[in-house]
Image (cartoon, rainbow, N blue to C red):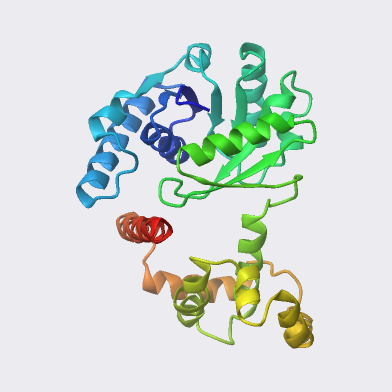
Length: 314
């Protein structure tokens, strides 16, 4: 898909990030929201973020900040926002009825070639798109927060999605520098959150066995260092003489440990209070402090992303 025009529905954090990613890829972007003030604020935030990225050397794409900003325009009229767009990315809050309302409106005004895509992190395509006239053009493109720094995009089709919609979306994500993965069918939590929730669940069950601070170190200075470059399956493959050899060596021990995992936690009560207290001591729940820590996280992610890109090119 050659650079053309995309429409972003919703100008919150995810919508702004998508707008920046597409502009970095040379696409004209129409950013839609219901309130002009929201859009004005969004453009100011995007400009500041791009300037900061340029100063730190992390700005994506070959275009300058001003060239990228010139590609982004705003609109409070939905029909005008999507006119001429070949790809429409919905980024409204994670509310099923709200998203269904948006897609019902889009269904009435788009043609037969534009792709209708949702950023939802957990709503199944069958719940979002069933009954739409353009259901074959509908798909989920779930980014990872924050999308500008973490390139993964989960592409999840509706049972009626045309294969060409999936292929075009995959090609588009590759073109703008993201790392798309295809799911062959929809499943609760998609892939990323199923893996993430499995880790969170066991972290919760380990309360009382290891401190929250040390538990996070197990990931950040242990597993996470490997997983930043290779996944769990390749880790298995390299930690033995291939997957089959790993299973032969460790399957009995894995089953023994897995059988002790216990039920899904309630994520409430005494365990929640203890973990919350520990994390609040490390990072107080004060907006200014949380924002500073998120900024530090994003800078780390930007640096890691740059390193990975350099390693791939080498």
